[in-house]
Length: 187
Image (cartoon, rainbow, N blue to C red; front, side, top):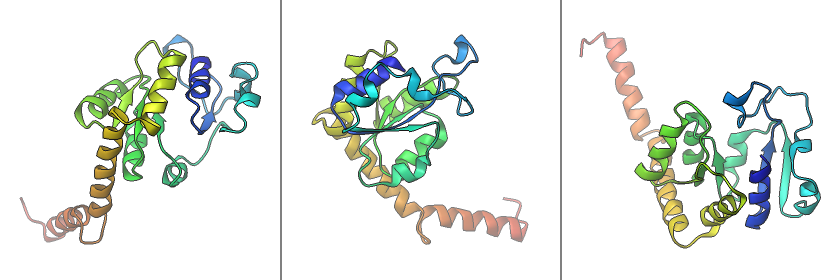
């Protein structure tokens, strides 16, 4: 959490950070956060961070409506744990991702997002502030890999938007399933 805060500050990019207190569940989940924590999450940030970033960052303790934040046109990137719901919300809203997997299938999802689909840039396992800053800058404004990621996300966003239209692929497939179930076909 400390390095993430310093990396965001070092990046110079505007940010919205939903800050949660570290979990008390031990080393297995030491990098995961518990939304039910009663501790002040801002107390875990580096000394002076809140004051130094008040003009570029907005810190929200504990929880915020993620999909609403991703839907904002001003949202230029999303640091994501690579949980599938968060990934889908990001893609549907056309927001490129910084992949920061924590546990379980999230590592595999991060590989798919970065190496497969090319819609995210992954932070390495060492997670140092300089690397975090560089990845955040790249996803937000970079001309190389960041531009490629943003273009791929825009294409997937367009495809998702079209698929969700009434005559789109999603509704067509759903109509076919409903038709098969209601007609009791054995296909």
